Length: 111
Length: 113
Image 1 (cartoon, rainbow over the protein chains, first blue to last red):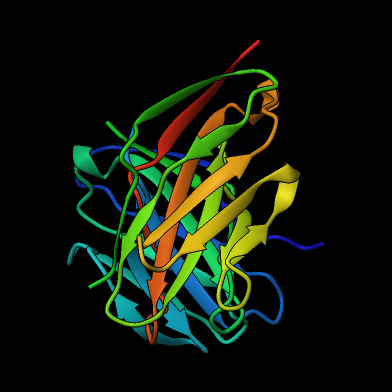
Image 2 (spheres, rainbow over the protein chains, first blue to last red):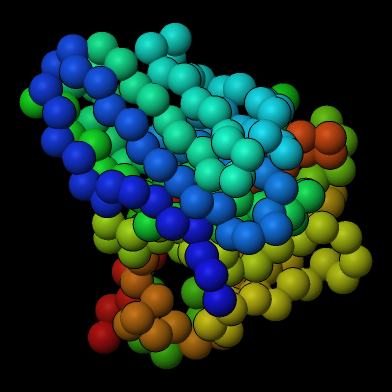
């Protein structure tokens, strides 16, 4: 069965640079979520989209933005990167109020 | 506001023994409850969920969880632990009308051979 696909799996950037993460949800899932998981931390909700419209917003910095495109894939854009942005970034998708299915994550390292 | 508490950072169990990983929650409406497992450098894998119906929910890999409304708990259980069950376990909750899941801080389960 198709799963949530995230790219890239690993990304190394320097401070003040920009990074873009991509997510391809499970086909026919109507909601996409982005989570950030710092080292030894639980996943923190960043933002979600329902049918391509932003539906909820969590602890997402102003330097970050996200969108969902007509083909339902989503991108998380991170600018002016800081050392503290180093984390695993997970995308997840769900159908209505069902369980979330997570991708394998994108590991961002900011040097 | 919705929240989840996992009171134990670490749980150690001997192989073959029953295991329990604790979770309590707080919501203003009706809870949707989930358990996920995470292996090192991997994504979160769905184990089981409670939405409505029977309080005892069975999930993947022989895990089950019991919803207890009066104690606002949703403890994860397994009758006989395997070494391969060693991983990080997250409880999560979604309140009625919310989309996002809120995760607990995680419990590292170690099964000792």
